[in-house]
Length: 108
Image 1 (cartoon, rainbow, N blue to C red):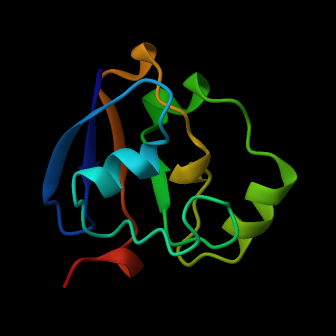
Image 2: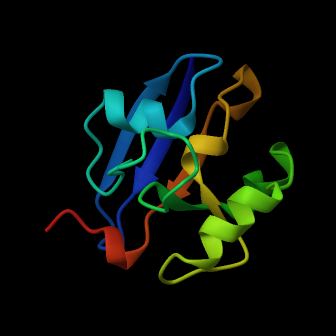
């Protein structure tokens, strides 16, 4: 299990335990993290699971493929560390991962 911390734009934090092999998005959904809507169910055909991978963790993931890059370009408040969390697979090496959520995905 890897612990992942999701941080909303207002600073509210949610720490969850994620199973190896599941997506970061699914870990958020399983733990009812607000701000991760996942309308497409993890098929990278929307950007409602958009998150900012903490800079210390960006090299732990493969680069986004063309499909993910295309969806990210349609998201609001894109940054260089923007990723679709549905495309990020949990591994034991991700224990401690921090993902911040864009202001456009606040829970209120």
